[in-house]
Image 1: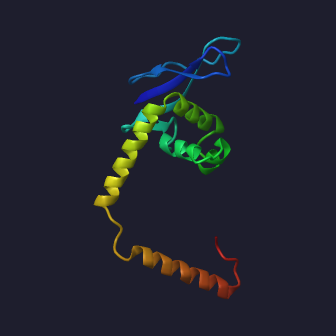
Image 2 (image 1 turned 45 degrees about the vertical axis):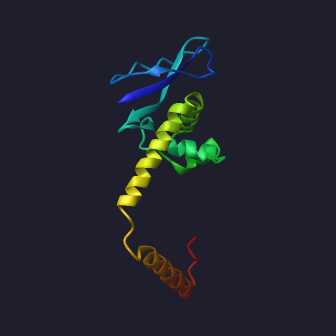
Image 3 (image 1 turned 60 degrees about the vertical axis):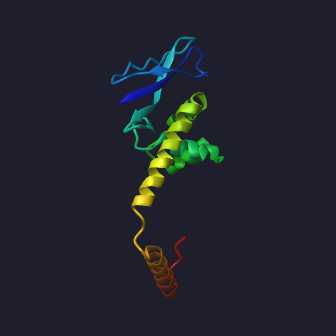
Length: 147
């Protein structure tokens, strides 16, 4: 596992510091113009993830690129803290080329999987029919309709 982190001499500025291969350097969190090191992203299974979660960095970046606020992104992933979302976005902004390559590779792998594992024939229609049945049953009972 490769841990990626940021270092700043000023708390309000974070810049990419470097990479670790197979080990972690202890976090140093000191204020007053000293060095701050905080880990937010790790490379795992050939891709980038928000550290301590199963959330791919690509998903956080996709939301950010589509105009979602960090708070909105965090609300979709209860395992992520707001700090980690901001850290992930900061990592992306400091390492756009690396993150874009990772996102492109993830899309390629997902597209290949979809091509080799198509949905069973008629699945979409079965799901739509079942949804319609549930909505009709709720309407007959007078229950509020699900969204």
